[in-house]
Length: 434
Image (cartoon, rainbow, N blue to C red):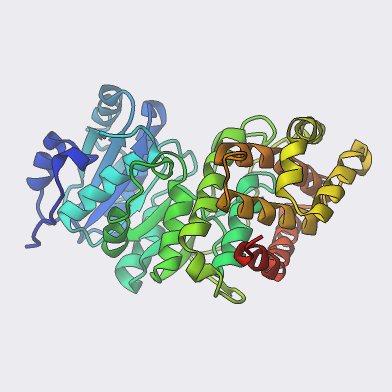
């Protein structure tokens, strides 16, 4: 029989005393499936079904726990769980009910509101139970299948991996923050090609859990907004074995990057730039990059198209130029600033932000974020970068609008290689005293 892990004082925990007591009564939980939720009662049933079926089909000899960490109406979520009590979906899926019945626990996390605290509660439960492995699933997934459980858990249990990142098939304009920033920055700075470094669905080992819970970030914005990129970066920088698993298409509500993503941009990019300072001793020494192993069968899938209003993106860039021109002049190297103003003079039909200019501008902003002054704080720096991101996204849409998703992916890969090529520019600016 496994012994339970220890926890720190109740005042710092994300799981309350009642949930702790319930967890302590559970014996020999091998696998934990965490579902961070915020009023997702309408969609969470599908995710729970897939998790239960996946555990029964692929891990029948392991006892599992589905831990739902709710930030909203916990009673609504409990009602959604109660609806599933007859378990008839096992018969319709031709999967035998497991001898070791999966436990399901719904609890309201406590502490700073945000996804990070929801995940912290799940990690605390994993540590308390000393699970062998775990995975995290978004509560609003529409494309999940039982196979996801195998793909996220098996690399940990069978191959000893510490972190399993998702590898999705996505439409060419889905995930522009990932494509333009998170993916190429992870590739070029930390030397690992992880295609979805801010994916919400991932597998993890107890070793990663222990490492994450020791970090002094849980009362910061990372716990609210930047949790996914933070975990990926920690896993890479602390030398855990990492891999990717192909999960097929990820279907979720479509978002036009010019209309919905500005808040997410500020949250994710702020975390990325903050992590650059934390791990500067590591990434400055990294030369080149290497691929990350992918498990699963990479089938050809056509994701749902997303419409992007390119003219709106260009308009927001030009509006941003008027608003943030003074900040751009302070942040950007003179040559980059002048070139950016030239881009602003282009009409929509010929609009293009050169990739090298985008990368150097982003690196200039990273340096400014590191050297924040009373005149220029973190919030202003990130806000002034948003219009340039819009310009890069518009340029990418213009370049790829007649290409299929596979061809557009090749363009993204080429851009990542340019990021890697220009890394010395960043290192020189980062380490200079000027």
